[in-house]
Length: 77
Image (cartoon, rainbow, N blue to C red):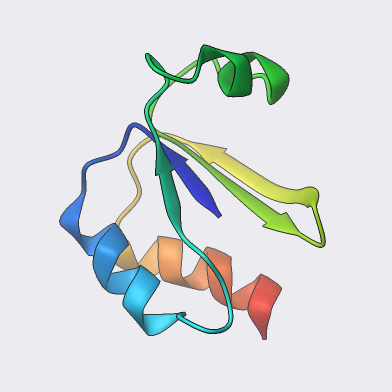
């Protein structure tokens, strides 16, 4: 999963919870405009979930910690 320009501290907490099963990365759209364009990111924050190199889920807008956790769990369970 990667999060586009989202500074929520709980993303780091979730990253710790899923360590070894998933990788959580933050991407700065100002510094990585090519990635934003490649994945059609038009609004921030955006969360993109990848599995086996493919996008399997994507959401835009601020989400609470529990919803992000649920979004990830359905793809790593």
